[in-house]
Image (cartoon, rainbow, N blue to C red; front, side, top):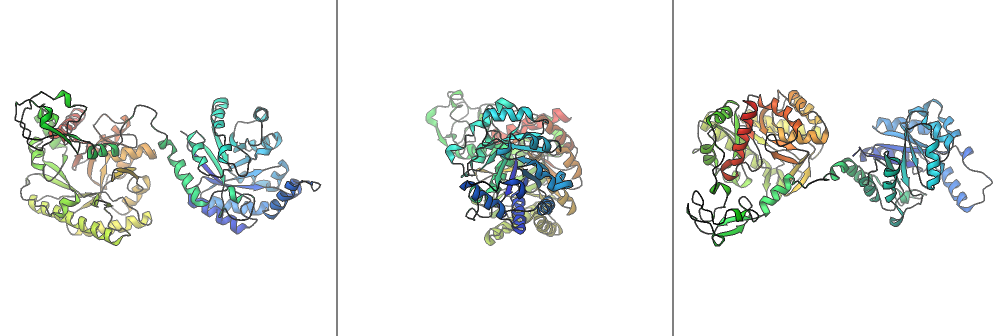
Length: 606
């Protein structure tokens, strides 16, 4: 889907006042629109003084009251461009173009009002400037539209579906005409909205409109012809939000694939079979031995029939989840693969309770503790973990069941709890350092911006420097564009874009680069993932590895994600630091997923 442009038409909503027009421009820029548009009529060319129609009397009065000179519009155009906006203008008469003399080419686009669609002289004169010309189709029959299109002398125009009522009621929007435009003329199209309900624009975008034009006002209750059918700056912010994300919202035209949040919810809310009582090795499993419970980390209802009346290879203890590993031997871990993992400092995520099991299954020498806030608050001991191993620690994302880690939260209690969890985690890492004689970095997801981006980096740079001086490195990790918090998806705006790269370097900040997150960001923001790794090479002290697909396919096995992810992974594998494999549910079935990942990496890079 093409990028959607949102134009805020100022029209006559400035009430003839330059200062009001400037404020509308500022509000439009803050809302994030693509550009603003003015209307211009030379009053001498606009209306016949002999008209006796009541409607004309009203219109002439309003147009005269809200007049801005061409000089004022020129000055406002300069101001709007300084705010980063495109600027356009509507003309109703080809004679009026001369009022702008040499400044006519300063506009980024031109607009033909609905009533002038068949003014071929006006349209072709504007097309000749080589800028984009938008033409509204309101008030015109199909025959008039065909006539107009056939007489335009250049191709730099885009038609906008428009119903010229002020306002347009819901039942009169006729958005089906957008489909007709797409099928008949096979070119980009848009929508010029005078709707009572601005949300109609969302439907137009979903139907393929690549341009949305709508009037902007400071108050819908203001006196004037156009205010009531305009949108406020806050409504434009909503329009811009949907326009930016419409291509993602519209994804999914194919077989259904779960995103990471759904996988988490399936695990946490779904059910698998657990043993009601001990099932001995060699004893056939029957349904009366089992019960369905959450979480879903073992054999579920769809698979259970394959394992009924089969005997497990080892005992399944009472209350334990029934897994495939009870019936099948996992992938063999050859000495070749283990040596490869050791040589590349590959590491596996572990919990406090399963580190010994994973170490026995995968004696590769590097492990990363992934801690819950409850485990951190329990002040875990470290004495029984192998001194010969290298360790890192992952800071909990949550500080309690309802709040994220945020040491600078506006909520004072959230900030206090976050800092407490952070200090306790650092203390656990320091104990591991003393136990092993090796540095133990702490990796954290710091994802909440409470003020400006610059303020965010300044505060975290100071905080992490304090921990570094105390002997423990806390490494912010590169984040995904969408995170899976509390069972839902949340868009993130820090540590995941090119704007972050410069700030990381400027602050000399050491980080953990997550290749999976980076690949998903590349899919959304279209930066070059491999280039970002190279530019941050001097800042990367730790790595997380997994493959990815699109913007939300996280934690995939290597080689199963998007092929273009390979370039970033190639660079990452050559770093001389710990590289934690984070394939989704790799720890289940006694680490079957981790075994598969280690074998795959050895086959690719050995």
